[in-house]
Amino acid sequence: MKKRILALAVVAALLLPVVAHANPAEILSKLTNKTVQEVQAERKAGKTYGAIAKEDGVANEFKKEMLSWKKDLVQSGVQRGDLSAEQAADYLDWLESRMANCDGTGQGCELPLHMGMKFGNGHGKGHGMGYGNGNGKARQ
Image 1 (tube, rainbow, N blue to C red):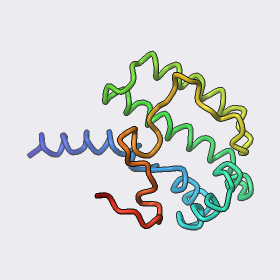
Image 2 (cartoon, rainbow, N blue to C red):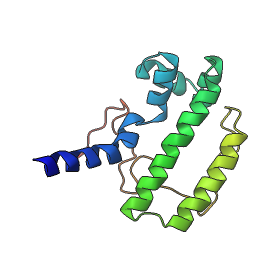
Image 3 (cartoon, rainbow, N blue to C red):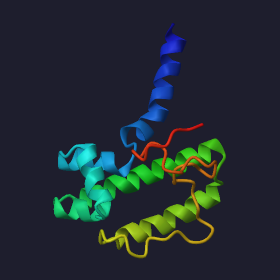
């Protein structure tokens, strides 16, 4: 019984960082006390997440939370074997320099050519075609 509890505690500790911050809209929702739907509506209206954070006076907190979330994603990629430790270190160095200069406009935020990190929907499996975004599409 003690081994099972310990095993569950280890699994929960590994998953907590990913579950705690599922996406930028949820991070902003927590920081601004807006609903996720309100944040997503502003995003769909053309505002960047950074601009929303700046307007609501939480830009610095948002940057810190986003950096933490992205570091967790990179680490989980290393653990899954999707990234080497060297790739992760290169990406994190680049990310930290970009985040330090982030002004919330979303300008100049392209990944270097070799840095596609599978953070987009679908991960190259054809699932990022608008499913789940209220577009009325259903998976076949």
